[in-house]
Amino acid sequence: MALAKAVLIGGVAAVAIPYAMGHGTNEISDLVRRGTVDLGFSVGGTGLDWSWPIFCVITLFAWGFFAWAEK
Image (cartoon, rainbow, N blue to C red; front, top):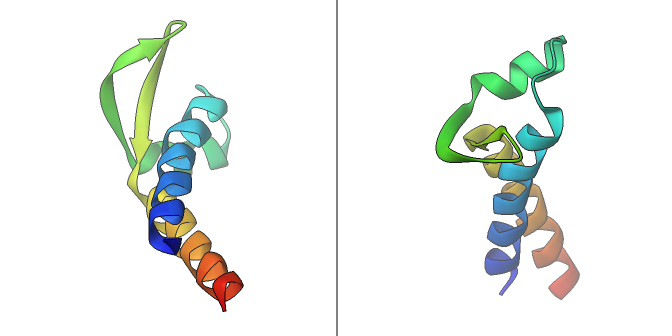
């Protein structure tokens, strides 16, 4: 059950963080934008992207925390 929760949280973060970063011009925005894939549709004129690095990192940490909490 911990993995399912972690994948859900990672998926939400993989879309929400690039969306929240918008089209910023700072170094962190550029770093986030490097690992994104365009999902092909937009919300409010801002395209939705999927970030594989964010998904992997957030899912890994969430899975570890949920597995630890179940013990």
